[in-house]
Amino acid sequence: MSKPSPAAALNGVQTGHICDRCNQGIRTGDKAVVYATYYDADGWVIRRLMCNCGSRIIGLPTDGADEVIVEAVYWSGRLVGVKTVCRSRP
Image (cartoon, rainbow, N blue to C red; front, top):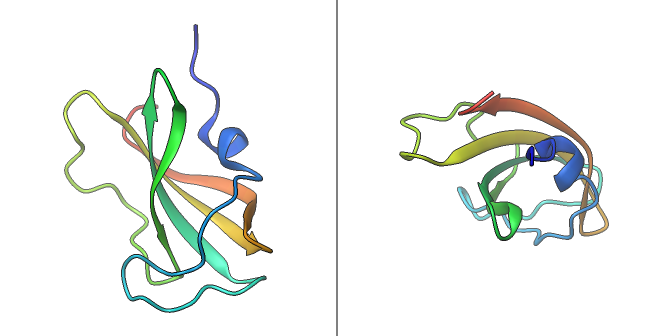
């Protein structure tokens, strides 16, 4: 079975509103940067939510993990307009 597209899977996902990097609030309409990891049992899971200060590259990938960085618009507690920016496994 193939993995779902990270952008499609994370579109509409409910999330918090505080940047995990600089602790600033993310408001409706702001751009958000999200780091997520794929797990067979759970699918794509958000690990970090950042405001526009977030990195858009995956440094050293975790062995065996499928990791992704996506950009999205934060809208009323959800991610919308999600776009994949960087992925450890194509």
